[in-house]
Image (cartoon, rainbow, N blue to C red):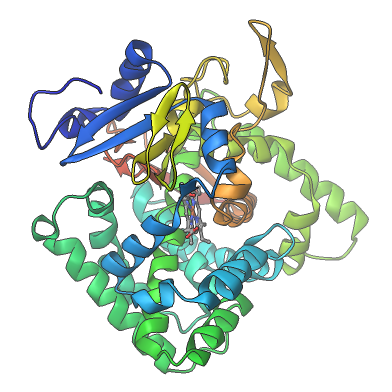
Length: 449
Ligand code: HEM
C-alpha cells in the first residue's frame, strides 16, 4: 500500500496534484502492482503492459460489468433493469461493437466528414484573420460534427453544450467516488442532458445513424420509453464527447508548437490532393472528401493521430475480481478492485523511446525497435487495449483524420505571436480519456488561396 497521511482521503490529493509523478514514483518504489487508498477505497493499480494485458484477457476473473452497471445507473439514471438485461449483453453491446468497428463505422464517418467540412467553412469565415482562442475555434466544431454524425441534425447540440461541459468538468471526481453532494453542477448538467435527449427521442430523428436507430428499437422493444432511451444515449454521448474533441484540440497545439508547425502535415495532404486531382480530372475534392480521406494513406497524419492519443490520454480501466486470483505475485480475492493505468504505459521509456517527447513521426520512424534485448511495441496501446477496451477509438482516429484534412486543405493556422499563454494538461482528470486543457492559446486562421 502506498503510504499516506490522511486516513479517508488517502493518496487522493497527491494523485490529484500530479498523477504522472505519483504513479511514476510508486512504480519505482513498489513495482508494477501497488495498492492505494483514495476516498475510503483500497484500489490496486497495475502499470505494466503485460499485467494490464492479462487483466483484460481474463475478463471472467476481472469483471467490468459491475462498474458499467453502477456508473450508468447512478450517473446517468439508466434503468438498472435495462443495464442488467439479456438484450444489453446479447444485442446492444454486440451492436455497439459492430457499428463502431473499423468495417462498421464507415457511414457514420461519412456523415461526420460532411458535417466537419460544412462547419469549418462556416466557422472559418467567422474567424478568418481574427485572433481567436483555439478552444472556441475547434471544440464546438468537433463537438457538433460528432453529434450530427451519430444523432443527425435534430440532435440538441447547442442546447447541450453547456450542460455537457458542466458534467464533464467533474466527471473524474464522480468516477473516483467523491460524494454527489459536492458535485451539484455536474449532477444538474446530466439531468439537463437527460431531459434534452428524452425530448430528442420523443421527436422526429430519422437522420440518426443506424447504430442509434437500431439500439433505440431494441430498448423500446423491451418496453422502455424515451426517458430510458435518452439516458442510455446520454451515457454514450458523454463517452463520445469527452475524448475525440479534446484530442483534436491537443493535436493542433502540439504540432503548432513544433518548429516546423503543421507544415509537414500540410505538405503530405497537398501532395495527396494533387495526386487525387490528377487521377480525377475535373472533379472537386470537397465533393469526394469522404472517399478521399478513407482511401488515401497519409502516414504522417496517421502517426500524428496515434502519437496524440498516446500523449494526451489518461485512461484507467477498473475491474472487480470475481474469484481468488494471482497477479504479478500478489493474491486477490473476490470483490477486490484492480485498476489498469494505461498512461503509465504510454509514458514508459521501456515501451516508448523518449516517452516524454511528443514526436508525430514516432509510428513511422519506430516500426519496431528493440531495447535492452526486449522487443518493444510500435503502437500506442501495447497491452492490446485499443481493440478490446473501447471500440470508440476507431471512430476517434478516423474522425480526427477527416477533421485535420478538412482544416488544413482550407486554412493556414498560426499561433498569435502576441499571446504568451499556453495550455497545460488537466492531469488531475486521471482515468477519463483525453485530458482537458487548463488555459488556452490564441490562433489566427486564414483561408488558403
Ligand atoms: C481517444 C479516444 C478514447 C479513449 C482514450 C477512450 C477510452 C475509454 C476507456 C479507458 C474506457 C473504459 C473501458 C474499460 O475499462 O474496459 C472506455 C469505454 C467506453 N468508451 Fe471510450 N475512449 C475513446 C473514445 C470513445 C469514443 C469516440 C466513443 C464513442 C463513439 C467511446 C465510447 C465508449 C463507451 C460507450 C464505453 C463504455 C464501454 C463498455 O460499457 O464496455 N469512446 N473508453
